[in-house]
Image (cartoon, rainbow, N blue to C red; front, side):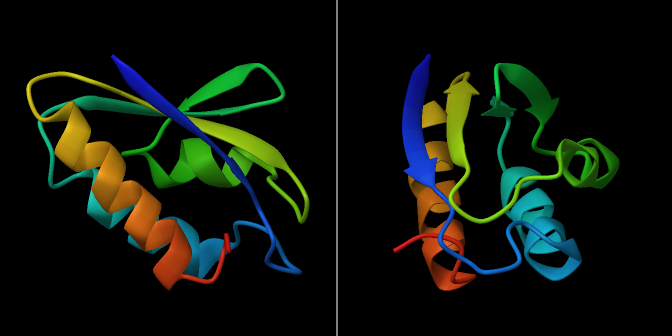
Length: 88
């Protein structure tokens, strides 16, 4: 299991478009990938779970990957967060 913490810098937080792209990115991997916010976990492969979290600007989140391709998955999610302008 690997995990990495991030601070959301986007003014609108994780909204529909970047959430969709995060789900697409996570769905490419076999590993179980979880987004944790305020101690609550959400499946990063589920758009409804991610949108229900209500992650806003300056939110501290943790991404946790567990499985055979966890390192590649975590790196790809980190890149996606950066590419979507959600983190610096």
